[in-house]
Length: 272
Image (cartoon, rainbow, N blue to C red; front, side, top):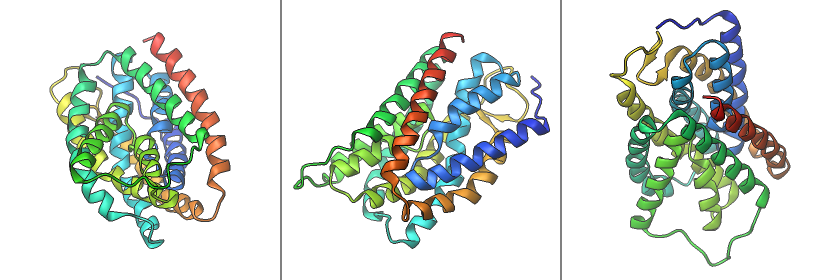
């Protein structure tokens, strides 16, 4: 199946990658909250088959996080903000959950997956606006419960093509991990989520007929390479800004954008 990758599409994907890379570094997100709805719009407008567009947008979004998270976490690590002890305890469960999530997504109807994503970004936007403070004595649980938490984070992240920050940042904040450390650690957790989810989506879509040219499983390589190139350059800028700017004010503005994207995805899902 042919799919036209013209210069206009390349420029659109470069701009999208630059914006999502910056926001990934700023908020510790993997960029999926922006990438998936905008990629769905762009690829649909360019003729991507309706039954594939959301799954390919989610899978390709996850694959870009492999690159974005590395660029972002290096910048956070220079500030000494990454809690590597938490990363080591959550990563095994995250890998298992991400692999499983990709197989579940393959079996889901496109409409259901679109609605699920709309609900996910609505939840994420609401979490950004709430700003509730945790009980001061609460701490992170032991290794076994953290494995379970990691599995849930990986599963949900693979289903919606995100880096897991929508669960991991609120969870770590709830356990009294400092916000800058929670954001930085979430950026580090994005890498095992992305690698495992990408492998899962390649396997899930490998044997499907009538895939567009340039696809490896559900991963659309031209979009992956274009977005990753731009996002790797801008993610460190966002991570540096996170340590200088009033992130609370920025999150409120970002939450408004997410609500608008949730409405778009819900409307789009209804027409698949």
